[in-house]
Length: 263
Image (cartoon, rainbow, N blue to C red; front, top):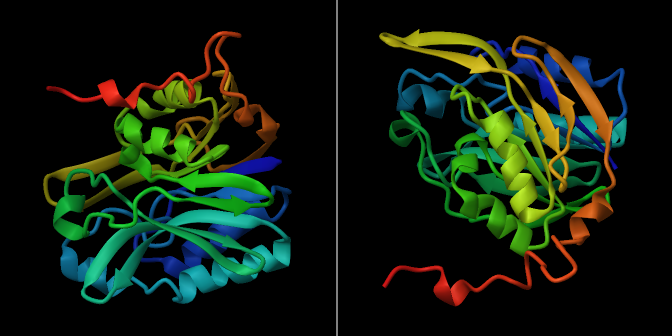
């Protein structure tokens, strides 16, 4: 399986431009699954909830529809973040789109910072889907801080975690090694670059460093802090089926959930 990340600097509110930019970076390369940043089409730093609503789309809106068409044209799958409107609620969501349509939808479970004022918390949990014949799960940015996110996807059978992000804290690219190791699966984190200062007194500088880690804790793809490009790496997804640490220990079989609580 060939997995790719797209790292670039979205222009806030420039939905058409941002989608076109992402596709232009992808087009010269070949991957089975591409991961785009969190909120890649709109940009991240919304001023208020009204602005979020104005730029949000229903799941069958133009952003996801365009990515489905591009997936069909290029013969691949896309996972990327968007502001999803559902009734009166808006979610920080990620889609999984393939040549045959929408295959999965995830709503961010763990909201970061002012996201709590702008978005509703996710209500779908962590689901596992099939893309390009491989079992994949989605989580978004700050979900990485909570080990339960990746563990839930592992227990659901995920071989690869697709992780659209807008990272500003310094630790995630290296911490995803641990998420990969402790669950014996692949993690694919696509982050953005650039700076947004649209809210008085608040500036976000995104750290880039999109990464792919293997179940053995090997870094097989790593981009720089300011690189704007797409990159692809070939992985052996079957490695994620083996949860053995030693011949005596299996990460899944050795779990003792009856003891994973206080009191």
